[in-house]
Image 1: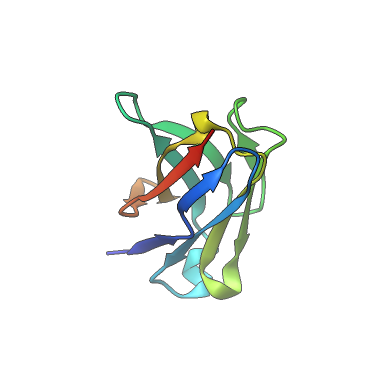
Image 2: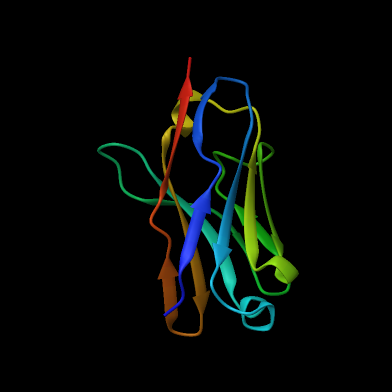
Length: 117
């Protein structure tokens, strides 16, 4: 069983920045095979995909965060990141890390991000 632990959330003012981290409890060699994604779920809304980075480094983003968020990974540290800039109140949500390989998918426990106006 793979464990994913998110960190870096919190309260920030609109226009500010946060960097989320997702540390995986596997070796770097195994971690490098995973596609890593960040999802978020705001109150009374469905969980939505925010960004993905594949095992070869290809990145994709939701339209709502393009140009503001950057997903990255450090396989040597078994960690994925989400750099969030120019945060807006609409970005307030619980953010979840997801690791996926073949038919297997793993989730972190989620971390709160709150952006005040």
